[in-house]
Image (cartoon, rainbow, N blue to C red; front, side, top):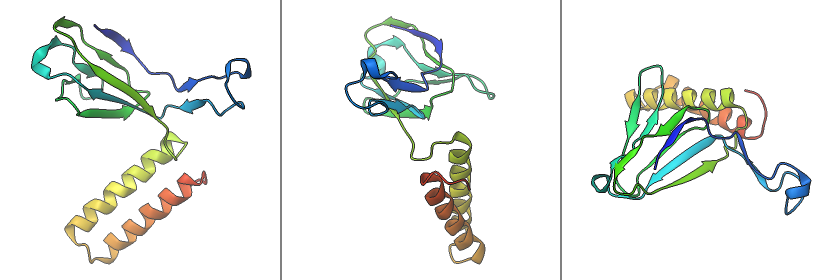
Length: 147
């Protein structure tokens, strides 16, 4: 009932044709994001927090059933030791339409910037331009083209 500090695998599934059920590449997934879904009431078990190392310190999560944390797969994390009860969680991995991590960050930052500008003044030329640039960056990145 614990899982030490680790980084999830960057690719899951069958990586060689001898073990694959179909054509090579059909049965594997880039794991751009990891997701933990909490399934047990937090007061039914002790410890068991999902913990992340970050430049801003240790972050710990123990959420209500049905709540989830999505995080970039390359972030070191651990599940703290469960001291009583049973921790139940589902772990999933997601592949982004945007293959490159730096491009994903660029699109995310542009989208956040556009949102901030739109919240200040949705009718401003700057806000509408930022929205359009973020949208174009997403479309180009999803097509695998550099922004």
